[in-house]
Amino acid sequence: MGRGVRIVMGVMLGALALAACDRGGKAGPVSVQEAQQKAFTNGSVAKNVRAADTITAFGRFYAAKAPRATILLFHQAGSSKFEYNDIGPRLAADGYNALAIDARAGGSGLFGENETVILRGKPGTYLEAKQDLQAAVNWARDQRLPIFIWGSSYSAALVFLVAAQNPADVSGVLAFSPGEYLDEKGQVARAAAQLRVPVFVTAASTPEEQQAARAIFDAVPGADNSFYAAKAGVHGSSTLLKDRNAAGADDNWRAVEAFLAREVPRARLR
Image (tube, rainbow, N blue to C red; front, side, top):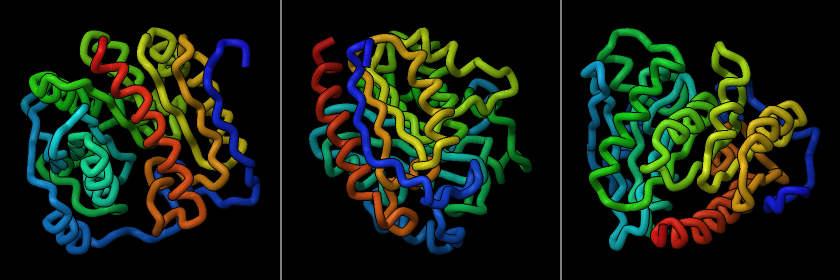
């Protein structure tokens, strides 16, 4: 292990199918109607943030009864805030406020309507979406709770850049299937090397995803980081959804919740 990093090893299932880079899991796209109906019945409320260029990033907020931290949830490409229709309520039940936003690098094809993309008239690039993530951090700063940022696929790359640029605000990072998805290769690993907060990384159970995620994880300094090699994992945050990862969702949730249970109390003492 060498660096004292906690490594959580699962049995690698090479035969487990991985969807293409930005198509988490095997289930088909969720209809707009289905996603929106679920959002109106899962306890979330509308909460929007405004980026530096004045574009509104539409969001859904999940409130905990006695919040211990704020978790900012960012989706994968072709996706929207509705990627977190099931994840947000569970985090709130665990005692964490959660805000899922529609970043401009997204779409309505996977989990339902991305209102930010609709407002702009077209999707933005991955790097352009970083200002939407920053807008969420700016909002969370005023909540006066530890801030953990959570990325899925391309946004799992961006969270390292955002955390590096907000060292006084971000208390932890969770990255689901990160990779060097940006045009400037090595940019994500260089940002990861600047972090001084605990990091959780996981990826789909394929050698390619594991290698890409591990390369970024290995750049993170410190001894409070967790690389979770899922026994059964799929791309992005879908690894926690039973309808997309029936074989591994429960185990993967346990790893995420253990990381948060360990690191949120420490962040509150910093």
